[in-house]
Length: 317
Image (tube, rainbow, N blue to C red):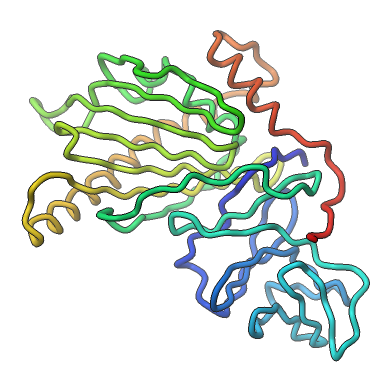
């Protein structure tokens, strides 16, 4: 299958204990992720000795992954050996890192090293990031297309008085936007529509983070939307959310207020994602449609820039 190069979510770090190995499906292939005391690693789910399934046979030994069937151990670069006898062929290995409580892997069909990094985000004062996951019949580009689909802010999300502070802007691997709007809170009047602001950035097709401010900029939320291509027809979407409250609040009051804010925004995020999912699953792939405006046309050109000539993944140097 054709996959755009970039960083893609593997699973929340909290779901993978130290010394654990887990399998997952990505880009039409089976992979494993394993965690040592100091790092995480992603390799193909097939021992290069006799084809053992590493999600079932793999154990972490120090900083290596060992296939328990015959004892071959593999380092982070996929090199395998047993008692000084090296395997000729390496495991395919993907660069991996942890960001915002999520394990990410870099994927490029041409086997190139990471061409960009994920943005550094401040973490002080935020509630813990909550993650949920859904699998949908869609494609990552249809999910990211939301950022340039201005009409859906009103028709799907019921935002009002929409004003762009920054129209969709494309800078190499990054797409960014900033919008002022009246937010549909789902609460009764007079707080059913409150003035708010959001900024969104997409870094490739596997990572999007949005930050919103409301209540006079005192209520601050962060949302992660992380599409992962499973196969030609399925995209796994990890959804992360956290919140923080600004202003002069006592320590106990601040924790209580932040916890309430976190639970409220989790509920609203679920609602908004359910609304967005209509667009993601009820829309034909955009290669089959004509771009209706300049923003969408620019987005599609930006997406095309993440394509590599497919070939076998090169061995990690």
